[in-house]
Structure formats: C-alpha cells, structure tokens
Length: 358
Image (cartoon, rainbow, N blue to C red; front, side, top):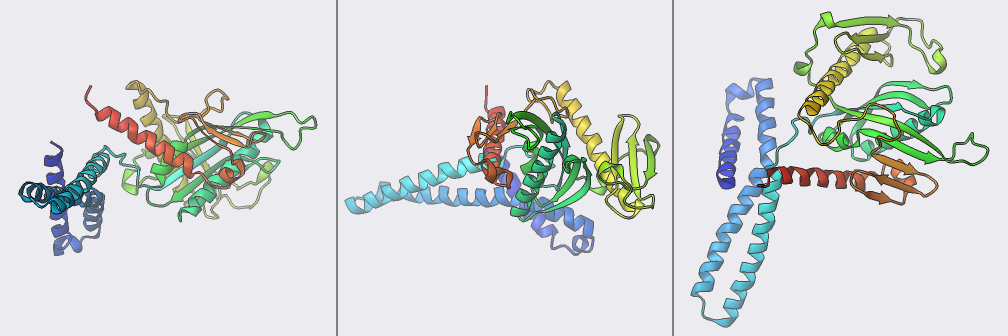
C-alpha cells in the first residue's frame, strides 16, 4: 500500500516537472507558483523514494552474489555489503513513513505571535517583554524576519500586549508549539523582602493568511479611528491613523497604531483579525471533536501552564514533554532549540501512533 502511494506521488512529481516547462503555465504567474509549490512539497518524499528503490535494487544484487559466490573472502564481502544495505533500507523506510505523515497545511507559513501579560501585574508585563525578546532573538537566529505589528507598553516599560509577524518558511510549524501560558518565578526588582513572585504571560500563535484566505464580511466589522498613543496613554501624534476593528459576531477586537497611515493600519488589523477568527473556529472544532489536547490557552490563569521559567533555580521546564534545562539566561536570549526539537519529536510520535493499527 505504501509503495503504491509512493509510486503515485513520484508520477505526480514528474507530471508537475513537465507542467512547469509548459508555456501555458510559465506565462501564468499564479498558476506557475501553485504548481511550483506543489512540486516543492513532493520533492523530499520523492528523493527518499528514489534512494529506497536504488538500495532495494542493490540488495537484490547482493542477494544474487551471496547465492552465486563460493569464494569465502568474496562471500564475506557480499554479506557485509548486504548487512549495510539492509540497515540503509530500514532507515529509509522509517524516513518515508515520517515523510508521508499528514501535514498541517499551515506549517510552511509565516506566523503571528501574540504576547499578552497575564496574572502578576507589572511583573507579568515585564515577563511578557522578556518573552518578546526571546522569540524575536530565536527567529532572527534562524534567519527569519520578526516584524513588530503592534505593541502596548505598561507604565513600567513592560509589555501589556504585542503582536509580531515572523516571516520565514516553516515559522508556523516551529512556533505553534509555543502557544499557551508561560509562567515565571523570580524575585521582582521592587520586592524588598526577597520573596519569589509567580507571574504569567500568554502566547497565541496564528498562521499569516494569504489574501485569498481573508473572508470577512464587511457588514460584520465595526471600525473606529483614533490618535496613536504611547505608554500611559499619551498622544504620540495628532493624526487619526490608529484603528480599532471589532468583529461583531465573535466580539474579537484588534487595534493597530504602529503605522503612520490609517490605511496601512487597517490592512494589518484586518489580517490579524481574520487570523484570530479562523483560530477561534479551529479551537471550537477541536473542542467539538473532543480533542484530547487543549487548544491555545487564552487566559492568564497560573494553573494552565506549558512552561515555567524559574530564576532562583536557573531552570526552564516544559511541562508537556517533561524537559528541563538549567541555563535559563541562555534560553531567554533565544536558545530554544532543545524545546523545539523535543516538541516536534512528540508531534511526530503522536501522528505515528494515530496511524498505527489498533
């Protein structure tokens, strides 16, 4: 069954190669991009399948040599080659099984990171700012671009809310597992008695939508314009460039003020709002299907945590996969890869378990 599917995918890959050289396709930029994307998505599995077929063929030749060979030295060589090829075949079978796992259609997209201070007052806002720097540094270390879409500061310089757009292939696949409540345990600067405080910040992760995916009814939107403001609410310009849009059916609200022109802020607000609406619909569907895992947590409740950053113990713990590292400073400076790798590994295990026969 798997071989039949792989043969079908290889045939489709070859057909796309031919279509990409067809003048009727190359002259249509949108059609060309669609087919080029489809071809790129198949490339990895097709290359693995071709390697698998080559190794299988070589194994057949090694089998024939072992049967025909009588010289002890040549027979030993044939057996050694057979063992090596058998190991390669097993590794390629495992890689093909992984490559054939169902993929999230949003995985390769850019992604929005929406960070909000949760429980803990000023300390929560300061922690939200720490998370913002952590994710920005991690994105930049991967060669991605992190664009600040919107940010609201607290009076103490912390972050009440921030929206960042991370641009890079596969950004959503990496960041979607970071969604949820993050908890910090540390002694605030303002704490005279040295007591450890616990605060939270929440992260919501949403794929950036393409223009054709933004399907909001204008009659469902309530727009408001106002002057941009900084920390504490003071006006930072005298033009009505800032916007607020409310999606009336859901009550979702997005404010955008970072651009100087109202039209630009409207465009950005609409994209974020559409992403939020789709994300909310997705979470409702998961709840209705009885998904075992909770969706992205929106509240700042201390009990709903995915990761804890404990400053006194220099420890960061991800509670979903039971991973703890003792280099907190490095983590908050963007060294997230151990967590990323473990979470992706766990996702793969779950997908394989779902495919396994009962």
